Image (cartoon, rainbow, N blue to C red; front, side, top):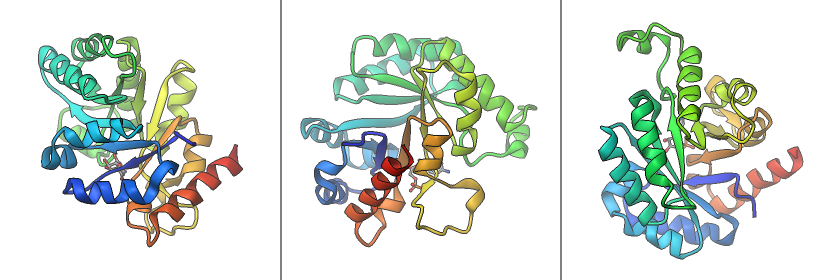
Length: 231
Ligand code: C5P
């Protein structure tokens, strides 16, 4: 089973998420649960996935004071998440408190978010950051690794730069993935799973290319085939 593909459950109800999980069956072992599904359906969604033998990337995107971040990471560990996200822009104290809280859960890895993928250099300037997106991504990624985070979430465009800079055991999880057979117009911002892994990503997060495919199981199989061919 290829656990490098994390299927994103971007759904409004537990029933629709469960529908995709059923369709994909044993072929999918890793799922991302984000704020939409968690808020709509509650933590039982995560527990059920974990009870069903799946790994869960709980994308909480935490940006809070250190004690609150630690409490939320603890809650994520208690429901069985394998990965949880925290914003590196919170700084070292926030990152360290997340890492410290995760130590109580052997399966739980803290991943840092750097600059959200929808922001460009101009958006950064608007919030008072004079660095370019690449500079800021690198700065925050280094900060996160120094604080003990196991990995970062990064756009495919940043994966190579991060792979070349960060320690070799750092996880790099990359969204913005399309199927090789897909033809999204916005080519600059999307890569295939094989390209992302080739650039140094350890995992890819894939939502709509699988969930909106006419046959999601076929789409996942195609992506897994792309990855094995590229290996
Ligand atoms: O685009 P797709 O449906 O595959 O997105 C799956 C997940 O990846 C979304 O939940 C979103 O959080 C994340 N994403 C991202 N940056 C992008 C595209 C998607 O963070 N450019």
